[in-house]
Amino acid sequence: MLNTLLQRFAARPDDTPETRLEKATIFVVAGSCSMAGIVWTLMYLAVFGPGVTALLPALFVFIVGGALWISHRRGDHLPAVYAQIVCIMYVTALLQWSIGDIGASGYVLAWAFCGPITALVFFPVRRALVWLGLYVVNIVVTVVFNDQLSAHGHAVSAAVRSMFYIMNLSVSSLVVFIFAAYFVEGRRLAEARVREKHAEVVASHQALVQREKLAALGQLVAGVAHELNTPLGAIGASVDNITTALDQTLVELPGTLASLSPDDLAGLTALLRECASTRPSLTSREERARRGVLQSALEAREIPDARSVARILVSMGVGDDLDAHVALLRSPRAEALLRATSDLVSLRRNSGTIRTAADRAAKIVFALKSYAHPGAAGSEPVEARLDENVETVLTLYQNLLKSGVDVVRRFEDPGLVRGRHEELNQVWTNLVHNALQAMSYKGVLELRVAREAGRVIVEVTDSGAGIPDAVRARIFEPFYTTKAQGEGSGLGLSICKEIVERHDGSLAVESRPGRTVFTVSLPSAAAS
Image 1 (tube, rainbow, N blue to C red):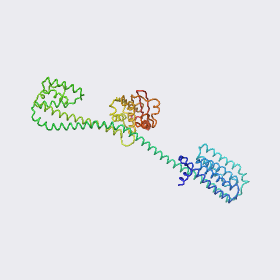
Image 2: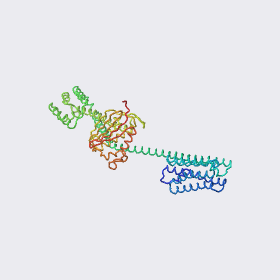
Image 3: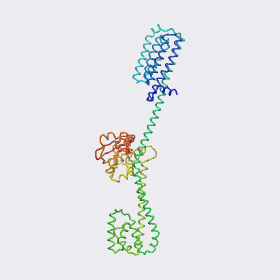
Image 4: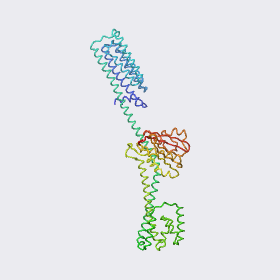
Protein backbone atom coordinates (compact mmCIF):
# COMPACT_ATOMS: atom_id res chain seq x y z
CA MET A 1 0.00 0.00 0.00
CA LEU A 2 2.73 2.46 1.06
CA ASN A 3 4.84 1.40 -1.92
CA THR A 4 1.95 2.04 -4.33
CA LEU A 5 1.19 5.47 -2.83
CA LEU A 6 4.83 6.51 -2.91
CA GLN A 7 5.30 5.41 -6.50
CA ARG A 8 2.13 7.21 -7.61
CA PHE A 9 3.18 10.40 -5.82
CA ALA A 10 6.75 10.37 -7.02
CA ALA A 11 6.43 8.92 -10.52
CA ARG A 12 5.26 10.20 -13.87
CA PRO A 13 3.17 8.16 -16.33
CA ASP A 14 6.09 7.71 -18.74
CA ASP A 15 8.54 6.52 -16.06
CA THR A 16 9.99 3.04 -16.32
CA PRO A 17 9.49 0.65 -13.36
CA GLU A 18 13.15 1.17 -12.39
CA THR A 19 12.73 4.96 -12.33
CA ARG A 20 9.55 4.63 -10.28
CA LEU A 21 11.44 2.51 -7.76
CA GLU A 22 14.30 5.00 -7.52
CA LYS A 23 11.94 7.91 -7.00
CA ALA A 24 9.96 6.09 -4.35
CA THR A 25 13.19 5.05 -2.62
CA ILE A 26 14.56 8.60 -2.34
CA PHE A 27 11.22 9.75 -0.97
CA VAL A 28 11.43 7.01 1.67
CA VAL A 29 15.00 7.74 2.78
CA ALA A 30 14.67 11.53 2.60
CA GLY A 31 11.33 11.42 4.39
CA SER A 32 12.75 9.16 7.13
CA CYS A 33 15.76 11.42 7.67
CA SER A 34 13.54 14.51 7.66
CA MET A 35 11.29 13.07 10.37
CA ALA A 36 14.39 12.20 12.38
CA GLY A 37 15.59 15.78 11.82
CA ILE A 38 12.38 17.12 13.39
CA VAL A 39 12.90 14.88 16.44
CA TRP A 40 16.55 15.97 16.73
CA THR A 41 15.54 19.66 16.48
CA LEU A 42 13.13 19.26 19.38
CA MET A 43 15.68 17.24 21.36
CA TYR A 44 18.46 19.81 20.89
CA LEU A 45 16.07 22.65 21.76
CA ALA A 46 15.28 20.85 24.99
CA VAL A 47 18.94 20.12 25.85
CA PHE A 48 20.82 23.12 24.45
CA GLY A 49 18.08 25.70 23.89
CA PRO A 50 17.74 27.92 20.83
CA GLY A 51 20.94 28.23 18.83
CA VAL A 52 23.00 26.84 15.97
CA THR A 53 22.84 23.25 17.25
CA ALA A 54 19.01 23.16 17.15
CA LEU A 55 18.93 25.17 13.92
CA LEU A 56 21.05 22.71 11.89
CA PRO A 57 18.64 19.71 11.92
CA ALA A 58 15.78 22.13 11.20
CA LEU A 59 17.81 23.47 8.27
CA PHE A 60 18.27 19.87 7.06
CA VAL A 61 14.51 19.30 7.14
CA PHE A 62 13.88 22.55 5.26
CA ILE A 63 16.45 21.90 2.50
CA VAL A 64 15.56 18.23 1.94
CA GLY A 65 11.83 18.94 2.15
CA GLY A 66 12.19 21.69 -0.45
CA ALA A 67 14.22 19.40 -2.71
CA LEU A 68 11.52 16.71 -2.44
CA TRP A 69 8.89 19.21 -3.48
CA ILE A 70 10.99 20.42 -6.42
CA SER A 71 11.59 16.81 -7.49
CA HIS A 72 7.87 16.10 -7.32
CA ARG A 73 7.00 19.16 -9.39
CA ARG A 74 9.67 18.49 -12.01
CA GLY A 75 9.22 14.73 -12.07
CA ASP A 76 12.98 14.44 -11.60
CA HIS A 77 14.27 12.75 -8.45
CA LEU A 78 17.90 13.89 -8.81
CA PRO A 79 17.46 17.21 -6.89
CA ALA A 80 16.20 15.25 -3.90
CA VAL A 81 19.06 12.75 -4.24
CA TYR A 82 21.77 15.42 -4.26
CA ALA A 83 20.11 17.39 -1.46
CA GLN A 84 19.86 14.22 0.66
CA ILE A 85 23.52 13.27 0.14
CA VAL A 86 24.97 16.74 0.68
CA CYS A 87 22.82 17.60 3.69
CA ILE A 88 23.13 14.24 5.44
CA MET A 89 26.93 14.38 5.12
CA TYR A 90 27.71 18.02 5.85
CA VAL A 91 24.84 19.19 8.05
CA THR A 92 25.60 16.28 10.40
CA ALA A 93 29.31 17.21 10.32
CA LEU A 94 28.47 20.81 11.22
CA LEU A 95 26.11 19.53 13.89
CA GLN A 96 28.88 17.42 15.44
CA TRP A 97 31.28 20.32 15.40
CA SER A 98 28.71 22.66 16.99
CA ILE A 99 28.10 20.25 19.89
CA GLY A 100 31.75 19.53 20.55
CA ASP A 101 33.80 16.37 20.56
CA ILE A 102 32.74 12.93 19.37
CA GLY A 103 31.68 11.84 22.84
CA ALA A 104 29.60 14.93 23.57
CA SER A 105 27.68 14.61 20.29
CA GLY A 106 27.03 10.88 20.80
CA TYR A 107 28.73 10.28 17.42
CA VAL A 108 26.05 12.16 15.49
CA LEU A 109 28.38 11.93 12.47
CA ALA A 110 27.15 8.32 12.08
CA TRP A 111 24.16 9.79 10.26
CA ALA A 112 26.52 10.90 7.47
CA PHE A 113 26.92 7.26 6.41
CA CYS A 114 23.46 7.52 4.82
CA GLY A 115 25.10 9.77 2.21
CA PRO A 116 27.40 7.15 0.58
CA ILE A 117 24.60 4.56 0.90
CA THR A 118 22.24 6.86 -1.02
CA ALA A 119 24.92 7.50 -3.66
CA LEU A 120 25.54 3.75 -4.04
CA VAL A 121 21.87 3.17 -4.82
CA PHE A 122 21.42 5.96 -7.35
CA PHE A 123 24.85 6.35 -8.95
CA PRO A 124 27.47 4.03 -10.43
CA VAL A 125 29.86 2.49 -7.91
CA ARG A 126 32.72 4.72 -9.05
CA ARG A 127 30.77 7.88 -8.22
CA ALA A 128 29.53 6.39 -4.95
CA LEU A 129 33.18 5.77 -3.95
CA VAL A 130 33.80 9.51 -4.22
CA TRP A 131 31.08 10.20 -1.65
CA LEU A 132 32.42 7.41 0.54
CA GLY A 133 35.83 9.07 0.38
CA LEU A 134 34.30 12.42 1.44
CA TYR A 135 32.58 10.64 4.34
CA VAL A 136 35.95 9.24 5.45
CA VAL A 137 37.46 12.74 5.17
CA ASN A 138 34.71 14.03 7.48
CA ILE A 139 35.61 11.37 10.03
CA VAL A 140 39.34 12.11 9.78
CA VAL A 141 38.80 15.88 10.17
CA THR A 142 36.52 15.32 13.13
CA VAL A 143 39.00 13.02 14.88
CA VAL A 144 42.00 15.25 14.14
CA PHE A 145 40.29 18.35 15.52
CA ASN A 146 38.35 16.53 18.25
CA ASP A 147 40.29 18.20 21.11
CA GLN A 148 39.85 21.69 19.71
CA LEU A 149 36.13 21.07 19.14
CA SER A 150 35.64 19.84 22.71
CA ALA A 151 37.11 23.08 24.10
CA HIS A 152 34.44 25.17 22.34
CA GLY A 153 31.47 22.80 22.54
CA HIS A 154 28.56 22.30 24.89
CA ALA A 155 28.93 20.77 28.30
CA VAL A 156 26.99 17.50 28.18
CA SER A 157 26.18 15.26 31.14
CA ALA A 158 26.96 11.56 31.05
CA ALA A 159 23.27 10.63 30.89
CA VAL A 160 22.62 12.97 27.93
CA ARG A 161 25.76 11.71 26.21
CA SER A 162 24.58 8.10 26.58
CA MET A 163 21.16 9.06 25.24
CA PHE A 164 22.80 10.75 22.24
CA TYR A 165 24.86 7.63 21.53
CA ILE A 166 21.86 5.35 21.73
CA MET A 167 19.66 7.56 19.56
CA ASN A 168 22.27 8.43 16.94
CA LEU A 169 23.57 4.92 16.40
CA SER A 170 20.29 3.05 16.70
CA VAL A 171 18.09 5.44 14.74
CA SER A 172 20.66 6.08 11.97
CA SER A 173 21.16 2.32 11.66
CA LEU A 174 17.38 1.87 11.55
CA VAL A 175 17.08 4.45 8.76
CA VAL A 176 19.82 2.70 6.76
CA PHE A 177 18.06 -0.64 7.33
CA ILE A 178 14.68 0.78 6.24
CA PHE A 179 16.34 2.34 3.23
CA ALA A 180 18.06 -0.90 2.20
CA ALA A 181 15.01 -3.06 2.98
CA TYR A 182 12.70 -0.86 0.91
CA PHE A 183 15.09 -0.78 -2.01
CA VAL A 184 15.77 -4.53 -1.88
CA GLU A 185 12.05 -5.33 -1.66
CA GLY A 186 11.33 -2.91 -4.47
CA ARG A 187 14.06 -4.48 -6.57
CA ARG A 188 12.60 -7.93 -5.86
CA LEU A 189 9.17 -6.78 -6.97
CA ALA A 190 10.68 -5.13 -10.05
CA GLU A 191 12.50 -8.35 -10.94
CA ALA A 192 9.26 -10.27 -10.45
CA ARG A 193 7.55 -7.88 -12.87
CA VAL A 194 10.41 -8.34 -15.31
CA ARG A 195 10.01 -12.10 -15.08
CA GLU A 196 6.29 -11.74 -15.70
CA LYS A 197 6.91 -9.52 -18.70
CA HIS A 198 9.53 -11.96 -19.95
CA ALA A 199 7.05 -14.81 -19.61
CA GLU A 200 4.49 -12.75 -21.54
CA VAL A 201 7.05 -12.02 -24.26
CA VAL A 202 7.98 -15.71 -24.48
CA ALA A 203 4.31 -16.69 -24.66
CA SER A 204 3.67 -14.05 -27.34
CA HIS A 205 6.68 -15.23 -29.28
CA GLN A 206 5.56 -18.85 -29.07
CA ALA A 207 2.10 -17.81 -30.25
CA LEU A 208 3.74 -15.95 -33.13
CA VAL A 209 5.79 -19.01 -34.06
CA GLN A 210 2.69 -21.21 -33.86
CA ARG A 211 0.73 -18.76 -36.02
CA GLU A 212 3.51 -18.81 -38.60
CA LYS A 213 3.52 -22.61 -38.51
CA LEU A 214 -0.25 -22.70 -39.00
CA ALA A 215 0.11 -20.24 -41.87
CA ALA A 216 2.66 -22.53 -43.50
CA LEU A 217 0.40 -25.51 -42.91
CA GLY A 218 -2.54 -23.55 -44.32
CA GLN A 219 -0.60 -23.10 -47.55
CA LEU A 220 -0.45 -26.90 -47.80
CA VAL A 221 -4.15 -27.50 -47.24
CA ALA A 222 -5.30 -27.01 -50.83
CA GLY A 223 -2.59 -29.27 -52.21
CA VAL A 224 -3.13 -31.93 -49.55
CA ALA A 225 -6.89 -31.83 -50.14
CA HIS A 226 -6.32 -32.35 -53.85
CA GLU A 227 -3.88 -35.17 -53.17
CA LEU A 228 -6.43 -36.88 -50.92
CA ASN A 229 -9.32 -36.30 -53.30
CA THR A 230 -7.46 -38.04 -56.12
CA PRO A 231 -7.08 -41.45 -54.38
CA LEU A 232 -10.50 -41.11 -52.78
CA GLY A 233 -12.03 -40.49 -56.20
CA ALA A 234 -10.18 -43.53 -57.56
CA ILE A 235 -11.49 -45.63 -54.68
CA GLY A 236 -15.07 -44.47 -55.32
CA ALA A 237 -14.88 -45.17 -59.05
CA SER A 238 -13.29 -48.58 -58.45
CA VAL A 239 -15.99 -49.54 -55.97
CA ASP A 240 -18.64 -48.63 -58.58
CA ASN A 241 -16.85 -50.75 -61.18
CA ILE A 242 -16.55 -53.67 -58.77
CA THR A 243 -20.24 -53.43 -57.92
CA THR A 244 -21.24 -53.43 -61.60
CA ALA A 245 -18.90 -56.30 -62.45
CA LEU A 246 -20.11 -58.36 -59.48
CA ASP A 247 -23.73 -57.79 -60.41
CA GLN A 248 -23.14 -59.09 -63.91
CA THR A 249 -20.82 -61.92 -62.87
CA LEU A 250 -23.10 -63.25 -60.13
CA VAL A 251 -26.01 -63.42 -62.58
CA GLU A 252 -24.26 -64.79 -65.67
CA LEU A 253 -21.24 -66.78 -64.45
CA PRO A 254 -23.03 -69.80 -62.84
CA GLY A 255 -25.04 -70.55 -65.99
CA THR A 256 -22.03 -69.94 -68.21
CA LEU A 257 -19.83 -72.34 -66.23
CA ALA A 258 -22.55 -75.02 -66.16
CA SER A 259 -22.73 -75.06 -69.94
CA LEU A 260 -18.99 -75.22 -70.61
CA SER A 261 -17.34 -78.15 -72.31
CA PRO A 262 -14.02 -79.47 -70.93
CA ASP A 263 -12.16 -77.70 -73.75
CA ASP A 264 -13.92 -74.40 -73.02
CA LEU A 265 -13.18 -74.74 -69.30
CA ALA A 266 -9.50 -75.43 -70.01
CA GLY A 267 -9.36 -72.41 -72.33
CA LEU A 268 -11.06 -70.19 -69.73
CA THR A 269 -8.57 -71.33 -67.07
CA ALA A 270 -5.62 -70.52 -69.35
CA LEU A 271 -7.04 -67.08 -70.16
CA LEU A 272 -7.64 -66.26 -66.49
CA ARG A 273 -4.12 -67.44 -65.58
CA GLU A 274 -2.56 -65.12 -68.16
CA CYS A 275 -4.73 -62.19 -67.10
CA ALA A 276 -3.76 -62.81 -63.46
CA SER A 277 -0.11 -61.98 -64.21
CA THR A 278 0.90 -58.37 -63.50
CA ARG A 279 1.56 -56.30 -66.59
CA PRO A 280 2.73 -52.67 -66.88
CA SER A 281 0.06 -50.07 -67.51
CA LEU A 282 -0.31 -48.89 -71.10
CA THR A 283 -0.79 -45.38 -72.35
CA SER A 284 -3.71 -44.59 -74.65
CA ARG A 285 -1.42 -44.65 -77.68
CA GLU A 286 0.07 -48.00 -76.64
CA GLU A 287 -3.43 -49.45 -76.14
CA ARG A 288 -4.49 -48.36 -79.65
CA ALA A 289 -1.36 -49.88 -81.12
CA ARG A 290 -1.90 -53.15 -79.23
CA ARG A 291 -5.55 -53.32 -80.34
CA GLY A 292 -4.48 -52.93 -83.97
CA VAL A 293 -1.93 -55.73 -83.67
CA LEU A 294 -4.40 -58.09 -81.96
CA GLN A 295 -7.18 -57.25 -84.39
CA SER A 296 -4.94 -58.15 -87.33
CA ALA A 297 -3.91 -61.37 -85.61
CA LEU A 298 -7.55 -62.27 -84.86
CA GLU A 299 -8.67 -61.54 -88.41
CA ALA A 300 -5.85 -63.74 -89.73
CA ARG A 301 -7.21 -66.59 -87.53
CA GLU A 302 -10.76 -65.88 -88.74
CA ILE A 303 -12.07 -65.03 -85.27
CA PRO A 304 -15.56 -63.49 -85.48
CA ASP A 305 -15.96 -59.80 -84.47
CA ALA A 306 -12.17 -59.37 -84.30
CA ARG A 307 -12.32 -55.66 -83.47
CA SER A 308 -14.55 -56.11 -80.40
CA VAL A 309 -12.60 -59.15 -79.21
CA ALA A 310 -9.30 -57.28 -79.61
CA ARG A 311 -10.64 -54.42 -77.45
CA ILE A 312 -11.67 -56.86 -74.69
CA LEU A 313 -8.38 -58.76 -74.79
CA VAL A 314 -6.33 -55.56 -74.53
CA SER A 315 -8.42 -54.34 -71.59
CA MET A 316 -7.74 -57.67 -69.84
CA GLY A 317 -3.99 -57.42 -70.50
CA VAL A 318 -3.66 -60.36 -72.89
CA GLY A 319 -0.33 -60.46 -74.71
CA ASP A 320 0.48 -60.98 -78.39
CA ASP A 321 0.49 -64.82 -78.17
CA LEU A 322 -3.05 -65.81 -79.19
CA ASP A 323 -2.44 -69.44 -80.06
CA ALA A 324 -3.26 -70.61 -76.51
CA HIS A 325 -6.65 -68.90 -76.71
CA VAL A 326 -7.78 -69.56 -80.29
CA ALA A 327 -9.92 -72.59 -79.33
CA LEU A 328 -11.74 -70.55 -76.67
CA LEU A 329 -12.23 -67.60 -79.03
CA ARG A 330 -13.82 -69.90 -81.65
CA SER A 331 -16.19 -71.46 -79.10
CA PRO A 332 -19.93 -70.73 -79.49
CA ARG A 333 -19.77 -69.44 -75.88
CA ALA A 334 -16.81 -67.14 -76.63
CA GLU A 335 -18.74 -63.88 -76.16
CA ALA A 336 -20.17 -64.90 -72.74
CA LEU A 337 -16.82 -66.31 -71.61
CA LEU A 338 -14.92 -63.17 -72.61
CA ARG A 339 -17.47 -60.97 -70.86
CA ALA A 340 -17.25 -63.09 -67.65
CA THR A 341 -13.44 -63.10 -67.81
CA SER A 342 -13.39 -59.34 -68.38
CA ASP A 343 -15.61 -58.81 -65.32
CA LEU A 344 -13.35 -60.98 -63.18
CA VAL A 345 -10.24 -59.17 -64.40
CA SER A 346 -12.01 -55.87 -63.73
CA LEU A 347 -12.61 -56.99 -60.15
CA ARG A 348 -8.93 -57.73 -59.69
CA ARG A 349 -7.78 -54.52 -61.40
CA ASN A 350 -10.15 -52.31 -59.40
CA SER A 351 -9.12 -54.06 -56.19
CA GLY A 352 -5.53 -53.18 -57.03
CA THR A 353 -6.54 -49.59 -57.74
CA ILE A 354 -8.24 -49.38 -54.35
CA ARG A 355 -5.13 -50.75 -52.66
CA THR A 356 -2.88 -48.26 -54.47
CA ALA A 357 -5.20 -45.32 -53.74
CA ALA A 358 -5.56 -46.32 -50.09
CA ASP A 359 -1.77 -46.59 -49.77
CA ARG A 360 -1.44 -43.14 -51.33
CA ALA A 361 -4.00 -41.61 -48.96
CA ALA A 362 -2.38 -43.35 -45.98
CA LYS A 363 1.00 -41.96 -47.01
CA ILE A 364 -0.39 -38.42 -47.12
CA VAL A 365 -2.09 -38.82 -43.73
CA PHE A 366 1.13 -40.28 -42.29
CA ALA A 367 3.06 -37.32 -43.71
CA LEU A 368 0.68 -34.89 -42.02
CA LYS A 369 0.98 -36.79 -38.73
CA SER A 370 4.77 -36.89 -39.01
CA TYR A 371 4.86 -33.18 -39.82
CA ALA A 372 2.85 -32.29 -36.72
CA HIS A 373 4.25 -34.89 -34.30
CA PRO A 374 7.56 -36.35 -35.45
CA GLY A 375 9.14 -38.94 -33.16
CA ALA A 376 7.85 -39.21 -29.62
CA ALA A 377 4.92 -37.24 -28.32
CA GLY A 378 5.46 -33.99 -26.43
CA SER A 379 8.02 -31.27 -26.91
CA GLU A 380 11.03 -33.11 -25.43
CA PRO A 381 14.02 -33.48 -27.77
CA VAL A 382 14.14 -36.82 -29.59
CA GLU A 383 16.42 -38.39 -32.18
CA ALA A 384 15.03 -38.54 -35.71
CA ARG A 385 16.26 -38.78 -39.30
CA LEU A 386 16.21 -35.54 -41.25
CA ASP A 387 16.06 -37.35 -44.62
CA GLU A 388 12.69 -38.85 -43.59
CA ASN A 389 11.43 -35.50 -42.31
CA VAL A 390 12.44 -33.73 -45.53
CA GLU A 391 10.74 -36.50 -47.53
CA THR A 392 7.59 -35.94 -45.44
CA VAL A 393 7.56 -32.27 -46.45
CA LEU A 394 7.96 -33.24 -50.11
CA THR A 395 4.96 -35.56 -49.80
CA LEU A 396 2.84 -32.69 -48.49
CA TYR A 397 3.92 -30.52 -51.43
CA GLN A 398 3.41 -33.27 -54.04
CA ASN A 399 0.53 -31.46 -55.71
CA LEU A 400 2.73 -28.40 -56.37
CA LEU A 401 5.82 -30.40 -57.30
CA LYS A 402 4.19 -32.40 -60.11
CA SER A 403 3.14 -29.28 -62.03
CA GLY A 404 6.63 -28.59 -63.37
CA VAL A 405 9.26 -29.09 -60.67
CA ASP A 406 12.05 -31.63 -61.00
CA VAL A 407 13.07 -32.85 -57.54
CA VAL A 408 16.66 -34.04 -57.07
CA ARG A 409 17.26 -35.94 -53.83
CA ARG A 410 20.84 -36.27 -52.61
CA PHE A 411 20.40 -38.07 -49.31
CA GLU A 412 24.02 -39.02 -48.58
CA ASP A 413 23.36 -39.62 -44.88
CA PRO A 414 20.24 -40.30 -42.77
CA GLY A 415 20.94 -37.06 -40.90
CA LEU A 416 20.31 -38.28 -37.36
CA VAL A 417 19.70 -35.23 -35.16
CA ARG A 418 18.46 -34.86 -31.61
CA GLY A 419 15.99 -32.02 -31.25
CA ARG A 420 12.41 -30.85 -31.32
CA HIS A 421 11.55 -32.02 -34.80
CA GLU A 422 8.08 -30.48 -34.84
CA GLU A 423 10.00 -27.17 -34.84
CA LEU A 424 12.64 -28.31 -37.35
CA ASN A 425 9.88 -29.50 -39.72
CA GLN A 426 8.72 -25.90 -39.82
CA VAL A 427 12.20 -24.98 -41.11
CA TRP A 428 12.09 -27.56 -43.94
CA THR A 429 8.54 -26.55 -44.85
CA ASN A 430 9.42 -22.88 -45.04
CA LEU A 431 12.61 -23.41 -47.04
CA VAL A 432 10.91 -25.73 -49.55
CA HIS A 433 7.93 -23.39 -49.92
CA ASN A 434 10.19 -20.37 -50.45
CA ALA A 435 12.19 -22.31 -53.05
CA LEU A 436 9.04 -23.24 -54.96
CA GLN A 437 7.81 -19.65 -54.89
CA ALA A 438 11.22 -18.38 -56.06
CA MET A 439 10.97 -20.69 -59.10
CA SER A 440 7.28 -19.88 -59.73
CA TYR A 441 6.70 -23.62 -59.28
CA LYS A 442 8.76 -24.54 -62.35
CA GLY A 443 12.42 -25.55 -62.23
CA VAL A 444 14.79 -27.79 -60.32
CA LEU A 445 14.51 -28.28 -56.57
CA GLU A 446 17.54 -30.01 -55.08
CA LEU A 447 17.62 -31.34 -51.53
CA ARG A 448 20.80 -32.63 -49.90
CA VAL A 449 21.27 -34.30 -46.51
CA ALA A 450 24.86 -35.11 -45.56
CA ARG A 451 27.19 -35.37 -42.58
CA GLU A 452 30.37 -33.33 -42.44
CA ALA A 453 32.78 -33.06 -39.49
CA GLY A 454 30.26 -34.29 -36.95
CA ARG A 455 27.45 -32.06 -38.18
CA VAL A 456 24.39 -32.73 -40.33
CA ILE A 457 24.08 -30.49 -43.37
CA VAL A 458 20.73 -29.88 -45.05
CA GLU A 459 20.78 -27.88 -48.28
CA VAL A 460 17.70 -26.61 -50.13
CA THR A 461 18.63 -25.38 -53.61
CA ASP A 462 16.35 -23.82 -56.21
CA SER A 463 16.89 -22.65 -59.78
CA GLY A 464 15.02 -19.38 -59.33
CA ALA A 465 16.11 -15.87 -60.20
CA GLY A 466 18.24 -15.48 -57.07
CA ILE A 467 18.23 -12.98 -54.21
CA PRO A 468 19.70 -9.49 -54.77
CA ASP A 469 22.52 -8.48 -52.40
CA ALA A 470 20.46 -5.70 -50.77
CA VAL A 471 17.64 -8.12 -50.03
CA ARG A 472 19.91 -10.99 -48.95
CA ALA A 473 21.40 -8.81 -46.21
CA ARG A 474 17.95 -8.43 -44.60
CA ILE A 475 16.08 -11.65 -45.29
CA PHE A 476 16.51 -12.91 -41.71
CA GLU A 477 15.13 -9.70 -40.17
CA PRO A 478 11.70 -10.09 -38.52
CA PHE A 479 8.80 -8.74 -40.59
CA TYR A 480 11.00 -8.07 -43.64
CA THR A 481 9.46 -9.46 -46.82
CA THR A 482 9.59 -8.82 -50.55
CA LYS A 483 6.39 -10.77 -51.20
CA ALA A 484 3.13 -9.14 -52.13
CA GLN A 485 0.78 -8.15 -49.33
CA GLY A 486 -1.03 -11.18 -47.97
CA GLU A 487 1.55 -13.67 -49.28
CA GLY A 488 4.01 -13.47 -46.39
CA SER A 489 4.38 -12.06 -42.89
CA GLY A 490 8.14 -11.58 -43.07
CA LEU A 491 8.59 -13.91 -40.11
CA GLY A 492 9.27 -17.24 -41.83
CA LEU A 493 13.05 -17.02 -42.26
CA SER A 494 13.48 -15.11 -39.00
CA ILE A 495 11.72 -17.90 -37.09
CA CYS A 496 13.64 -20.55 -39.04
CA LYS A 497 16.94 -18.96 -38.05
CA GLU A 498 15.85 -18.78 -34.42
CA ILE A 499 14.73 -22.43 -34.39
CA VAL A 500 18.00 -23.58 -35.94
CA GLU A 501 20.12 -21.53 -33.53
CA ARG A 502 18.08 -22.87 -30.61
CA HIS A 503 19.30 -26.32 -31.75
CA ASP A 504 22.95 -25.09 -31.70
CA GLY A 505 22.92 -24.82 -35.46
CA SER A 506 23.32 -22.19 -38.16
CA LEU A 507 21.36 -21.07 -41.21
CA ALA A 508 23.14 -19.46 -44.14
CA VAL A 509 22.31 -18.52 -47.72
CA GLU A 510 24.25 -18.19 -50.96
CA SER A 511 22.59 -16.87 -54.07
CA ARG A 512 23.23 -16.00 -57.66
CA PRO A 513 20.87 -15.90 -60.65
CA GLY A 514 19.71 -19.43 -61.33
CA ARG A 515 20.93 -20.94 -58.05
CA THR A 516 20.03 -20.13 -54.45
CA VAL A 517 21.19 -22.41 -51.62
CA PHE A 518 19.94 -22.30 -48.04
CA THR A 519 22.24 -24.35 -45.80
CA VAL A 520 21.30 -25.60 -42.34
CA SER A 521 24.03 -27.03 -40.11
CA LEU A 522 23.07 -28.99 -36.97
CA PRO A 523 24.97 -31.15 -34.47
CA SER A 524 24.84 -34.80 -35.48
CA ALA A 525 23.49 -37.36 -33.01
CA ALA A 526 25.18 -40.24 -34.87
CA ALA A 527 28.46 -41.72 -33.70
CA SER A 528 31.46 -40.47 -35.64
